[in-house]
Length: 304
Image (tube, rainbow, N blue to C red):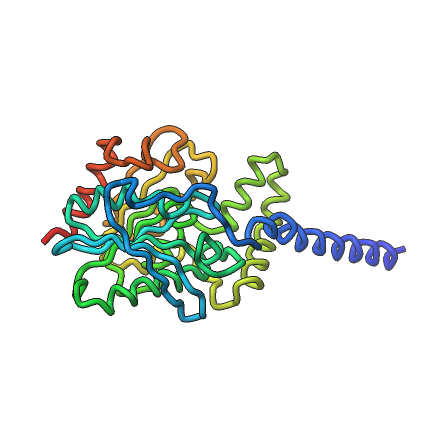
């Protein structure tokens, strides 16, 4: 009888492990195994600025689409990146205009598997740091940007990539991040809870999500997530923003990141559900408090 019970227990355990291991690819597969084509792509001319379209090569062989907005005698160069499925990075042209009027050049790039950038798998921030590195390499190759600070500015998944990038790329001088997740498994599990999954199931599920991403993107990416990478910031400036009732990436992600961040990191939170944080993302100057806070951060640290 004991052997029978032991055998049944072993079978149930094995089945449970198989089911738990199957959940992440079943849920995430359609989300990440795709090339995102945007319904809306904005033009720089819509904002009264000029942008040069670039095609940059990553070290692992992907062509990355980007747009360069130049200014005379720039104070710094800002790299913009957007979210997992929307919007197109061209939605940042309003930010680029605002910053160009204040002396900052910009490069906006679509991550791999987004827009015109090559790729058919969204890497959830684990490999997109290589896309950022391609932009940094381009900036470093241009005499006009010689010795200028480079600041990475991201939204949502792009906010996570921004933090991961500054943790991995020493040439970056600062970071601005909006609504970033602390790790993909954190946001995955929290969204399971929001959907009504039992808490015990989500606790058991979490390591299987991590196992799936490591298998998908490689063992070397296991530590490429914001809660870990923020520790590599050193003394470089950072501004991290999140709204308290964010329904897409819970506020607890912000709390976990800040708990691991150096003490000098600047934070700004807003009450309510503002995943894009500003009240007018396309025309950020219309949100005067937001515009002033972003410009104050840049001017305090990068306006010599």
